[in-house]
Length: 149
Ligand SMILES: [Zn+2]
Image 1 (tube, rainbow, N blue to C red):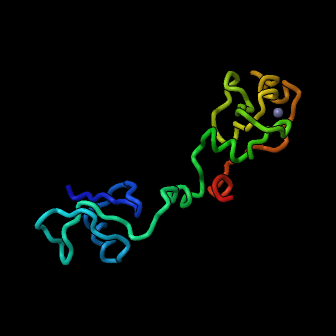
Image 2 (cartoon, protein in one colour):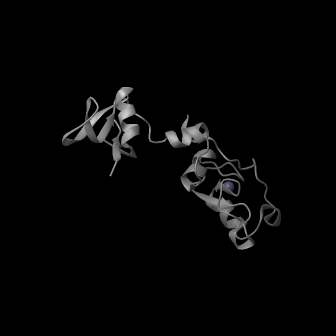
Image 3 (cartoon, rainbow, N blue to C red):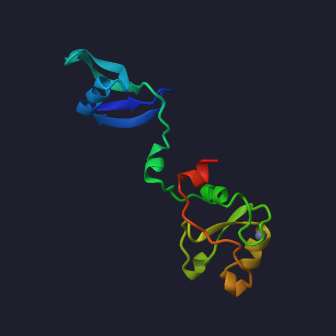
């Protein structure tokens, strides 16, 4: 009942906060009332049902704060600059370094960008078993590794 909707400057829905928090945002002038409850006041303000930020906030802020980016296949491609981790040719796919059939997990440290040729050659084998080597070790990227360039 006392939750207030927050909109980004461009109208994108960002989430909700408590009424108290929303009033603080109005007071600090980081937001303005977007939609109010007719006829109801909360202190000097019309009681907000929704507020809109006065400055644009990147929805990615949650990642920036944590510094860590959630795993994604697209993220792996960006981290590895769309280059195959085994031969550095343009990558079109991703490869599990330790294959799933051998218990490999799907996360930043076990997935690399790969070209189809290396991916096929490797199949269900580890790099050692397949006789190919990683050019660089996979790492957990921070926000700027993925989106900051
Ligand atoms: Zn390759």
